[in-house]
Structure formats: C-alpha cells, structure tokens
Image 1 (cartoon, rainbow, N blue to C red):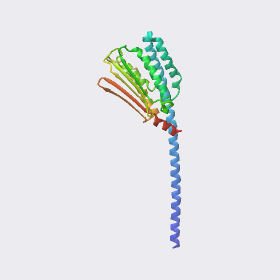
Image 2 (image 1 turned 180 degrees about the vertical axis):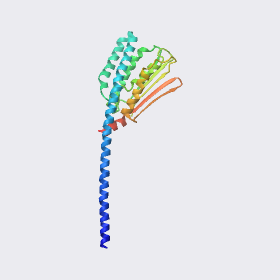
Image 3 (image 1 turned 90 degrees about the vertical axis):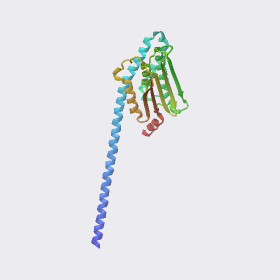
Image 4 (image 1 turned 120 degrees about the horizontal axis):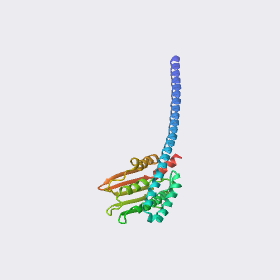
Length: 249
C-alpha cells in the first residue's frame, strides 16, 4: 500500500513538473510571438511610410504641372486663375507635409482645383459641382483625411471628357455625412482618342495604393461605365478610421 502511494505521489509530482514546464514553454512562445508581431508592425509602418513619401513626392510636381498648363493655355483668365492657384499652392506647400488634413481643407482645395480647370472648358459645357456637407459633424475639422485624395478622380474627368462639346458634361459631388467622406465624379466619355497617360495612369495606381496603406478596409473605390458615362465613386469611413487611430495609441 505504501509503495502504491509512493508511485501515485511520484506520478502526480511528475505530472505537475511536466505541466509547469509545458506552461512555461507555451508562455515563452506566446511572448516571443507577440515580440515578433510587434517588430513586424514597426517594419510594416516604416515600409508604408517610405511608400507614401515616394508616391507623394511624385504626385505634387505632376499636379502642379497640370495646373500651370491649364493657366498658360488661357492667359486671358490669368488673374482669376492665379488667385485660385495661390490657394492651391498654399495647400501643396504647407498642408501636404502632414500625413492627414481635415475634410474641410481637402474639399476647399478641391473646389479651387476645379475652378482652375474650368478655364479649359467651353462656355456651353455643362460642369456641375455640388457639396452636401454636414458642418456640425465634429470630425469635419479633424485631421483624418489624406491630402490630395480627391485629385485623381477630378483630373481624370477633365482629361477624358470632351471639354468643347455642348452635349458633354462633368458632374462632381462632395459629401460629408455621418463622418464619411464621399466624392462622386462622372463625365460623358469623349468620342475623341484620349491623350496618352503618363506611365500607364500613375495617378489611379497611386490613389488605390495610398487608400490601402492608410485606410485598409475602411474605404470603397468604384469605377465603372454606364452607357457613355464614366463614373468614379470614393467613400472613406473616417469614423471607423478615427476609432482605429485612437485604439492604436
């Protein structure tokens, strides 16, 4: 009986020691896994930051050249255009240094950009610009929106519409509702061959890439054709993005 008690005691003790050993190994493995994930997150952030810096350094000169070309082609409206250009340059030189700007700042910049592009169109051309803004939303003046995020959709419309035809049109709608930024741009597709795009449409690739890096699954970007109208729609849920930023602090 004493031998059996001794064997049972030794077995229990052995199991306890083995359990403790396995627990320590599992605990160490879990800590190591968390350390590796943390290191990966840091590296991923650095890579994403470098990618954004590269993309944005290409984007600003490209945008500025397009603006100056528009002004040069219609010198009779230079004074008005330069006034709008000064606002655009302020935004490019100062605000785009920040990772994020406020939705209010981005929309005001985009409206100035549209005014500059208007000098290229025929007086009979239909250009409709609407804003549906809930200015009481507290996130409207928070730095949550990537600067120049609206450029590609707007410039694409002016590039591919026939700006001299009276039956052509461009429609641009900005919306800020429920802490979500939306931009819908549509234009009648020109029957003329489009001008060659630089390096295969760099702006479109840049926009999608920036959105994926900054907003992950908190955005939608759709581009499609209905009859002879090209439609692009961007929506960014900044409430979800804001919550994620707060949780990461």
